[in-house]
Image 1: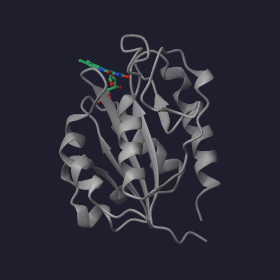
Image 2 (image 1 turned 120 degrees about the vertical axis):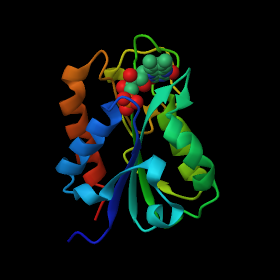
Image 3 (image 1 turned 45 degrees about the vertical axis):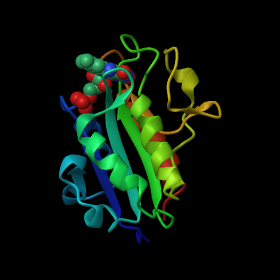
Image 4 (image 1 turned 135 degrees about the vertical axis):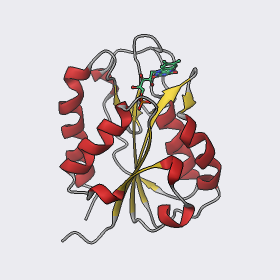
Amino acid sequence: MNMEKKGIFYGSTTGNTETVAKQLAQKLSIDESDVMEIGSATPTLFLSYDVLLLGSSTWGVGDLQDDWEGFISDMESMNLSDKKVAVFGTGDSSSYSDTFCDAIGIIAKAAEAAGAQLIGNQVDPTEYEYDDSAALVDGCFCGLPIDEDNEYQKTDERIDNWVKQLKQSLS
Ligand SMILES: Cc1cc2nc3c(=O)[nH]c(=O)nc-3n(C[C@H](O)[C@H](O)[C@H](O)COP(=O)(O)O)c2cc1C
């Protein structure tokens, strides 16, 4: 049974988050046409999905990727109470160790405030080396952090583990 309509929306400046989005789509059998840049998303399209996988890299010092800056306030005013939301992101745990993948935390909080059920929000932070992150909630990362700058060799395994976790919350 595969009843829930799943969509992936991502913001990516140099392509890292886009690559992760495409890998997730492949592993979750999500059609390419359901993988979209958040910069060209409309609220109507966004709300047409039951399960939303939302991806953003972190820029500045702990900021959302630019395309998300335009959409996050729209999202905050939506009613997402019938949606499952999973958040993923890319960051640099070496150069930006105090704000590692903060965007994950920003998007997850906005989705929860809009009523969404967060899934994939139990990621073990002991597998990462960093000093602080806004994605830390109750001792876990509330989404999937990926570090293509320093730990690209861990990316496949991290994605696989997360996909297993997600599948337990999907129908
Ligand atoms: C100017 C600059 C600022 C950055 N700030 C952060 C940050 O605060 N936290 C973080 O985890 N990564 C930070 N990064 C790293 C990027 O998020 C990382 O390279 C990411 O993979 C880029 O993904 P994208 O190509 O999908 O945009 C920064 C990178 C640059 C060049």
